[in-house]
Image (tube, rainbow, N blue to C red; front, side, top):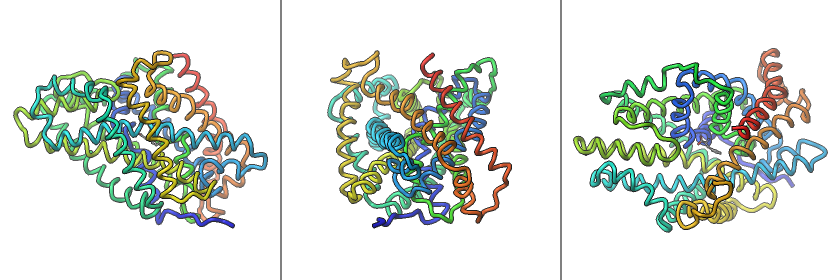
Length: 455
Ligand code: PHE
């Protein structure tokens, strides 16, 4: 008996949910930093081209596979192919990767909740800028507090997922995605009007072509894949909830544009403030948890009210953006448990909560008591991130494009993209898209994979 599957209610719902998955920590701290490191505007240009030419076709491929199979990431590929075991294994991988990512992503989510509370309780005002910078190290290396916040954050995400596709994920995304854009715009206006902000604007706008190396291309593509949540089963799973009347090309383009726009806005919201404060933009979590609080503290000495308001808005943005992404990660597992074992959403969410919660404990403690546990110089947290985003994700994305390009019939892809001929799609455009999926994307993925190993 076919089990009833929920669907998203409208095109906007699809775009909001997918944009929710896409817009996350990757846009807020990773994108602005990588842009500066890799030639400013020159990098943005390459990023846009790689998104259009490679990531977007892969995105369309993932949505098509999800919608056509109408099942979670695990069964999607094997359901569409007669000789299933390779694709079953790949499917299993696409369920495993998001669980791995959710485990460490929710640790950072927990840090953001803690910092939101710090902002609300005026913690940044009562200390010196240096104390605030140092506070981060002390916080993450302690045992209990980050764990409690990690669990809280993960529980909140699992609760939204338990609420269902329509009344949980769709409702939450519709509420939060517009809010995220408003928040980032408010912070941007504030940031670019600070004295000395122009060097931050230049940092993002100055095209420095001398910094472009093969590595830049790999970084741009890798970032674009991560940012669009590709290769993790999330988009396949969300694709399985897209109605058969929906235009896949339009919703994929809408999601990619929103994600790109948000990354650029976040860049202009963060970097001008960092430069105005006269600090070097740091990499990774240090940027949002050390540099930015340092700015709030410095600013708070003259303008305590403004500093408090902006700091609350800033950490609220991070918490919400991280939540909508983590929700899509949790959903992959919950959808799998439902499709494969008929485990109901609330129970499924609880199981995923326990699994990721437990794995997250190891990630969280790897900054404190477990910090000496390393493999190849990487602590557990870094290992999870590296293995999932640099190895597994590429492998899963590779499997999907090879599947769509070589296993699925071209007519079936056409059928999916045009909704069995209901939409007029230019044949040349389709052929280009198909070529990009079949040949360019696998080649590009192999290239990033190799580059990741060489450097
Ligand atoms: N796309 C998210 C971001 O930019 C990250 C993410 C990864 C979300 C994997 C879902 C799945 O932060």
